[in-house]
Structures are given as C-alpha cells and as structure tokens.
Image 1 (tube, one colour):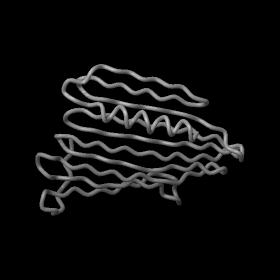
Image 2 (cartoon, rainbow, N blue to C red):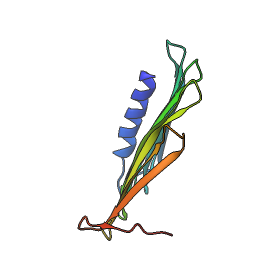
Image 3 (cartoon, rainbow, N blue to C red):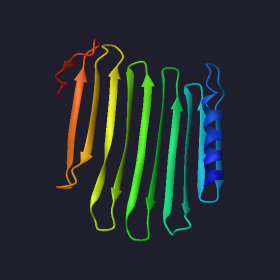
Length: 168
C-alpha cells in the first residue's frame, strides 16, 4: 500500500505542476501490486487518480482511492478509504475539496457499520459563493437511538449574518 501511495503522490505532483498555457498532452499510467495510478495533462489542465487495496495482518481489507485536478480556473481533490473487517464491520472515510472562480466547497465524513448491524458516523460540508460571499455550513450525523440521519445547516451572508438558506 505504501508503494501505491508513493506512486499516487508522485503522479499528483507531476501532473499538477505540468499545467501551463502551452502544455503538451501527456498521459502516464502505472500499475502496482494491488493498485494503479493514472495522470493526464493537457492544454486545459491536469488530473490524476489512483486506487489500491491491501489485505491487512488482522484479516481486514482496506481499499483506498483518490484523485485531483487542476485547470486555469480551479482545482480540486478527493480521497476515500474503506476497511472491511472479518466480523462484517466496516468503516468508510472520505472527503473532497474544490476551489475555483465561482467559489469553494469541501466535505468530509465517515460511516461505520458495526458487527451487530448498527451504524454510526456523519459528514460535514461547507461552501462559499465567490460572487456573493454567501456561504453554507452543515452536518449530518447518524442518530444512535434511531439509526436515522439528522441534518443541520446554516447559511450566512458576506458579513457573517445568518440568512435563510435558498431552496431550489
């Protein structure tokens, strides 16, 4: 897994630093024991993604994936890991972040399935509109008593005052 992570990191660095107005098109793909990474670069930007899986000493299996992109107007990245244990329990963690001319957004969270079939976890998310300065911040958690998701969120204007969140 360490070798796969090193390959992913190296490919991300190479791909994301190769962005320029006169960039040539390039593609790199590497496969390793239990994983692979692909990086592309062209006149409109660069991107990289990778994934891998490994069986751990305790008998669990962990899979991980991630990716990143960069263009003239923005950049973003995502990553996640999932571990499944021999007793049937599992944990998933993931997140992403993007930033560009129109604003930024990020989210991260985790979810755990226990061996008895119960769940726990949650996610936090936020975003900001670059043009207006309005932002959203919220979270969703699994209620341990009911096993159902519970959400809360707040929107603010550019000055930080709480406003009603827009509905579509």
